[in-house]
Length: 534
Image (cartoon, rainbow, N blue to C red; front, side, top):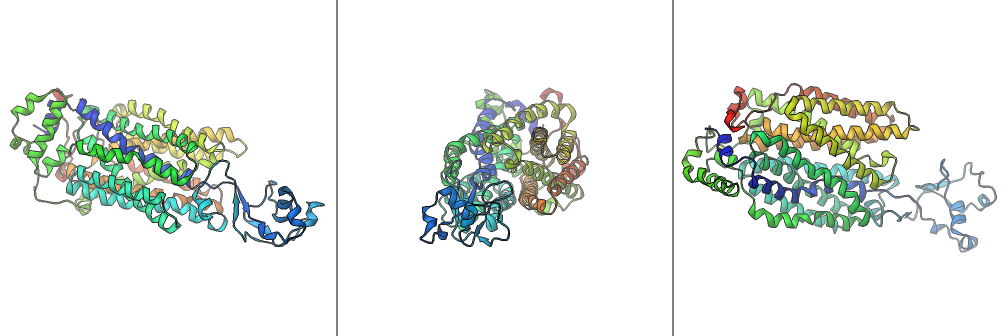
């Protein structure tokens, strides 16, 4: 008897599993909130130089605001005041002849900036003047945050396999809560950047551990449905984010508001179960029996566990060495594990790089920033339905590769659409976002099924680490448009296709039981379950 047989006897998808998924939704709400909030907290509103320093005590003080701008700030090609330049002294002659601006001396803003607060009460840009020459520091906040997420994936992937899913999850809750609120109350940019880095570390643990914990408690038949159901919290909250941001326009208040679900998550943690798979794989059969009995009671299958002795559980999962402690080095010690690590790393890098390359470009969508973010969230819903019906029909591998190829194709097509055809560009961009979400939804389930129980969190942690590396360089890729406008899209297109081809070399995992040991992966045994359990 295998673990899947035991799980089937206590019901692999009953009230217990539904309750667990619901408990995981609470902390997972914060994932899209924090991963995408930079679109709002780091937004750059319209701005111009503060020209109060030009007041010479004479005629300047008697001018209207429009006239002051005319004599104090040069005009851009589109007719709006320059955002980063001002005249060295009032040019009063422009009141009579505004076209005579040739060779007038200008300097960078000398006395700060004046911002348009009609959309945002406060952002990072307005708080610390992260505009003009400092605009790259504003973009750097995204990179810093996702570098933290990348480090967190490595840390919590190891901790989860070493000390258990439950303990590592609590640590991620506490870490995220402390540093999220610390970032909201930071009064120096350097301190804020550091707090966002450590917030990313904690959030990474929530992301990868919650997924694995739920998948390890679900039977084969319902793994696809559960993976997609869990990913719906991202879609719904991504669409909810602009609604919250519309009413909370101060960046400090927004971070605090979007982090409050974590307090409820910490309270609910006391009722979370440990992974029975992990407990058995680590020789803790008594604890595994306790949680399986709890599952059976929830699902009204008490009789089976009453007759099952804890000692029997040690036989349902073959444990090579109960005292052995696994680490990231075990991902590269054997041939097939090395190959798996290489391919999943490339796939995750490509999935995340293209997804966030589209998601973090809300300004380029051509409509209101709140509406743009809502569209980006809502467009993911069709992707969920498509994946739900295709994952069990054509398998994980073809879905993963196909979604990446279609994402890359949409990015390539967007390069060919002239800017004046904005409606077509918008449609192709939304379509690319939909396929990018389909690839992200698939990769979480696929990777969880590929790695063995003893290394599952390490494998997912490493893969997520590669993904966050891809996200971290997205802002840097976007800067390539200064060299050649289609350059960033070209990089994203090639990345998507490279990841798609890599996915084709991964083994299929549809309708096979989860691997438990490294030996399962190396021997590539077909881990099917008996038809009686389907």
